[in-house]
Image (cartoon, rainbow, N blue to C red):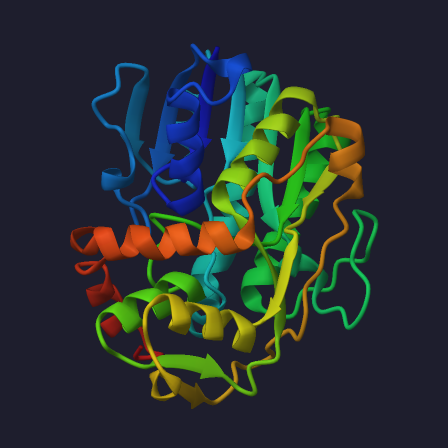
Amino acid sequence: MRILVTGGAGFIGSHYVRSVLAGRYPAVADALVTVVDKLTYAGNTDNLPIGDPRLTFVKGDICDVPLLRELLPGHDAVVHFAAESHVDRSLVSAGEFAVTNVLGTQSLLDCCVLAGIGRVVHVSTDEVHGSIDTGSWDEAAPVDPRSPYAASKAASDHFALAYHHTHRLPVMITRCSNNYGPYQFPEKVIPLFVTNLLAGRPVPLFGDGLHRRQWLHVSDHCDAVQRVLEDGAPGEVYNIGGGAELTNRELTERLVALCGGGPDSVRHVADRKGHDRRYALDDTKIRTSLGYRPRVDFETGLAEVVRWYRDNVEWWEPRRAELRAFPRGW
C-alpha cells in the first residue's frame, strides 16, 4: 500500500507518519509513505524519520498542481493534514489561509480525482461550527465559522463533500477537538505556555480565561484518522472528540503547577478578536460505527508532554525565534 500524506512534517501529520512507519496500525504495517510538505515555519523534517526506507519526503506546495499530478498516481490513499492552522495568524494574514486551506484543498481533490485515488481523509476542525454555550455538536450541526481560519477550513470541508457528490471521490472528513502532544510548534497554547514557563517567562492568558476547550492527545487523534481511513464511509463526516474539557484558566493552572511556576507566572492580556467561548464535539458516531476510543488520560498525557518539552530544549528553543517575528509579539 502507498499513502500520500500532505503536511506530514507538521505537528499532527508527522505523528501520523511516525505511527504508520512504527507499525502502530496493522492494516498499513508495510505501507510506503510519501510526505508532501511546504516546510513553512511550522513544518520541519526533524519531526520525521527521514532515513526510513519506506518514507519519501517531497518539499512541495499542495497548490502546485503539476507536482501533485506527478506524485499522486500509484498511491492508494491520501491523508490531508496540510493547512494553515493558527487562529491568531489568520486574523492578520487571512489571505494565506484562503490560499492554502481552500485553493490548496481544491487542487488536491482535483488531482485525486484524476489519479483515481481510492481513499481520501480530509482532516478538519471543530472550529468550523463556531461557538456553543451548552451541549455539543454532532456531525449534522450547522457550520458557522467565526475566524478566518475556521472559515477557510469550513470552505475546504464543503469542497471535499462537493467532490464526493459530483465526482464520487471517496473522501471522508474528520473534525477534531484541540490537540496536544510532542513536536507541537510553540505558538499554540500548551507548548507556548510550557516553553515560556521553562524559560522563566510569564504566560499570556487571554481575557478572563474562561473560554472552554476539549483536549485530545495527538496519538488518539491519529488513531481515529486511521480508523476513518480504513473503515469510514465515503462522503461522511466523523467527529473526534476529547474527553477532557477545561477552561483556559484551568489548563493554565495545571501547566504552571507542572512547570513549577507560581501565581506571578500568569499575565492577563486583551482577549483575541472574535474569541469563541466554547467548543464541544459529540463523537458518538465514530465510537459506535468504527469502535474508536481515546486511550490517553489527559492528566497523564499533559505531564508527559511537559516532560518532553523539558527534555527537548534543543528542538523548541530555535523555533521560538519564529514567534518574535509574529505581530502578536509573544
